[in-house]
Length: 211
Image (cartoon, rainbow, N blue to C red; front, side, top):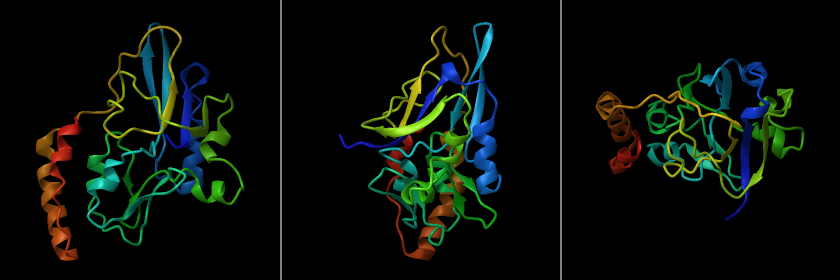
């Protein structure tokens, strides 16, 4: 399998300082692309720093009616904002809730600091800001994200490697279940958007994978 860029997170090194989140928001205008989620674990706490996982099989890209989402040769998934119609369908397809609306009404998400990396000017701001090395990035052949607080990795094959806590198990459910009936309004809006653009959407079976 071809190596691609991935985030690497080590629970055992995270001190829950929020530096990764602050650095991302400072660089990109408080769009909340990265989240730090705190869990109870035994008699202590641990956290997960997560953003877009730049999946091998990104459902956001699969369902976009405007073909505005792309995955490049490095594995980075990006949104072409000039093509985005702001339907929000991608945000419902993503099991990690990684996409948000920008101030202009189009969708936004983590870009892996693509411009910095490709220009050789640095590493992702979130990784750079982490004082303990809990958040890193590198080239991996596949992600390792089969943990009990994230959706099964076979849904989208996320490019994230998670070093599990040494003791205990996390007992929180951080990704809320998406009820299929909640899609109706968004589906109607998206179908109307597609009609206006001359597109057709025949991808509904993927819903069976989104819990």
